[in-house]
Image 1 (cartoon, rainbow, N blue to C red):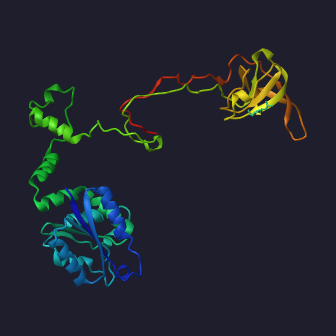
Image 2 (image 1 turned 90 degrees about the vertical axis):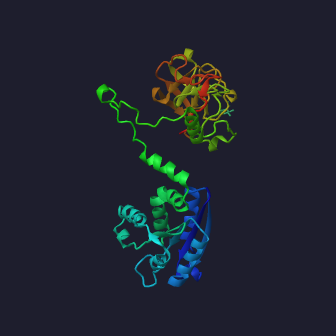
Length: 349
Ligand SMILES: *[C@@H]1O[C@H](CO)[C@@H](O)[C@H](O)[C@H]1NC(C)=O
C-alpha cells in the first residue's frame, strides 16, 4: 500500500529564505528509507498558528495518511505548532508523544521540554517532531514501528489490522521444557491451518530465489551466491617467499655468498635466475627466482661486505637451509579447481 506522507517545516526563517530548510529534506530521505512505498509532499510555513492550522486542515481533507511537522514545538514566543495541531485534531494520541519523549530522555534531559502533540483527524495522523535534524530523525525512528498499523486502523483496512492483531496475540516462542514431558502442552497452542494456507504463508514471506544477477565483486557484500564458485587457478599461483631473507640453493649449505640482486613482491620470477654460490635478497610474498629451492630468513644471516652506497655485496648464511624451507609452493593454499564458495552462501567479510 502506498502511504501518502506530508512533511511540514514550521519556521519563520526558512519560510523567509533566510535559512535553508535542513530538517524537511532529511525527513524526506528518512521516510523513503523506512517506508519505500510512499509519496511525500513537502512545504515550509511560517510560525503562524492560523497558517499552520489551515495547512493541516487542507492535508487532512486531501486524506494524507501521515503529516509530520518539524519545528515550532519549543518554548519561544512564536512556537505554536502544538497549538495549531490541537485545533485540527479530533482525537489526541498521547502515547506517540510519550514514546518519543521517553526514548529521547535516555540521551538528553532536554527532551522533557518537548511540547509535541500527536493525534488524528479523519484518516490523517498528525505528529509534531522536533525542529532539529537530529531530533526529528531520531523521534521518527522511535515511532516508526507502529505507524503503518495506525494508518491501517485509520483507513479501516480490516484484513491488515487482523493480521497485526493475530501476530501480536500469537503465542510467544516455545516455553516447552523438553525434558519435562509431563508439563508439555497436551494440545498444540497453534491454530491448525490448511496445507494450502501454510504454503501460501511461507511463499508470501520468502524472497524469490530464482532472481539472480551478475554484479561486481566489490558490490557483493551481504549478497547470497547463486552458484558454487571454483578457483580458476591455484593459490598462490607462483612460488612465494614466507620470509624476508635470501633465496638460496640448498646444496650450497652455510658460508659466504655473493648477493646477486634483490627481488620484491610483484617482480617477475623469470627476470632472475639463481646460480650456484649466489643468493638473491627477497621480501615476504615475493616470487622465488628460478633455480632457488629454499629461503633463509634474514635472522640466520650476517653482512660481510658492502659498497659505498651501503649496498650488500656479500653475506654469510649461518644456518644450513633445508629443501623448500619458507617457500609456499604453487597451490599450497588452494589447488586449482577447488570449491572456494558454495551456492546460497551469504557473502560476508
Ligand atoms: C634484478 O631483479 C629485478 C627484479 O626482479 C629484475 O627486474 C632485474 O632484471 C634483475 N637484475 C639482474 C641483473 O638479474
